[in-house]
Amino acid sequence: MIDTHCHLDEENYEDLNVIINEMKDNYIIASGYDIETSKNVCKLIRKYNNIYGSIGIHPSEVKKFKISDINKIEEMISDKIVAIGEIGLDYYWDKDNKEEQKKFFIEQIKLAQKYNLPIVIHSRDAIEDTYDILNKYLKNTKAILHCYSGSYEMAKKFIKLGVKFGIGGVLTFKNSQKLVEVVSKLDLNNFVLETDSPYLTPVPFRGKTNHPYYIKYVAEKIADIKGISFEEVINCTTETACSIFDLNI
Ligand code: NI
Image 1 (cartoon, rainbow, N blue to C red):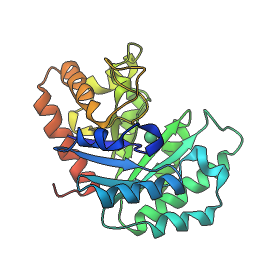
Image 2 (tube, rainbow, N blue to C red; image 1 turned 30 degrees about the vertical axis):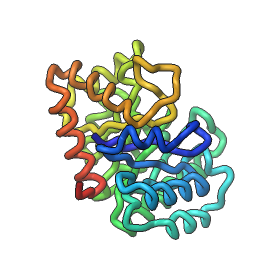
Image 3 (cartoon, rainbow, N blue to C red; image 1 turned 120 degrees about the vertical axis):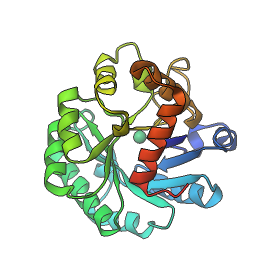
């Protein structure tokens, strides 16, 4: 299994080693959301063989940075950095700096393109603007819309741009009919598994701290919805993740 998106910062866990050890036979892509957490990702990928990294400045953090700070993200790019993210737009938390958010998003897409890396996108209450920017700037860059929460119709538009979807614990929540529809109607090869740990913990642990290992509950739910085996979900989503992040595992 590959948890394609999680935040493994020390302060989130009593003992990070224990959490990572649960995934010792599996793979993790740890994600940063600003300069500091991207530095943490760089430490983790040096320490653990089965962890790869994604680095970038999250839309809710752009207020704290100048556009030139993206250079600091660029300096951190190495062999085990397999994506730029999470980047994107968030109008739920910040409505007053939309133009600034767009600038950071576009510049970081360009950074990914310079290094031939995929992007991991955060989009909240901003799906139309996210689409417009990807439509204009994505070109042949690979992309994952992490924690997808849009409609089936919108998903089909993103698929035409070559975008895949990160599916996490939200799928197991009672009020997730829209996402269940997306998962049931679209081919399995459009999805990768993610936890967004420590957030969005799947049922049966909803409300507690999330662990990367809990992606198995997300995989079980997808198998259940699509009427296929757990192994099929794992094999297909792992293959998709390896192709997007260019992992040779
Ligand atoms: Ni995240």
